[in-house]
Image (cartoon, rainbow, N blue to C red; front, side, top):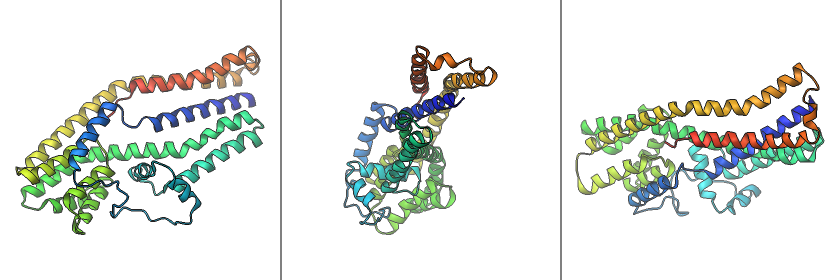
Length: 322
């Protein structure tokens, strides 16, 4: 039984490591989508770059300069991207803190394998527990960004009603912050605060597009900026954009429903070998003993590596980027 538990821990560690690497490597679903978003954002942000170190926005995080972890994370070449990742996840952590959590989890996994399980190999494999903080951040970021996208049509409708009532666009941003829940309320409150503090509306909108890099945000920013330059009925433009976003969300909802069976099959095939081995070890002790001796041990190693890889491949086949 103890041997089976050890191998189950190995499988879980491999699952965690592969999922962490997959989440960190795969940002947007396709390179084509990234190129379109970057081109739209460059068009909407010809005046300012909100990622510039000289940007004096209201979201700058002041940290202690004496922190060792801060100095280590400052040397990280993509510190700004990490700060944006943590902000988009809505987590109250700084880059030094997330590095510290990663180090603590990795050391805990190493000590668990070496001291408690008396295996250096398991200790090295359980170092992958350090991926838990990153997985948590990325999953929360995905949930928060998805919530923001789902709230966007309602926010556009609220701004349209404000414009048709003769109220200014800036007051429409404030209305979204007052009437709707987080996360869209928080973001539009930031826009309203920046404008009220004297920041140009163009720059405030670009800051919003930088903080919340959703697929719809560049169209929203471009619509407002073009209307301010050339004129036109902004309420009608935003109303059409709200309708398009709703239809897109409805379409991807149908697609996800169709691929839900593939995801369920992937999860079932991943859990089935572990559940079957556990059931056999309980009902018939000693039945699986040949698996823990050569040549059965080699097949067990192959299964521990193949099951997580097969699960990830099934999930990637069924994944649809919104």
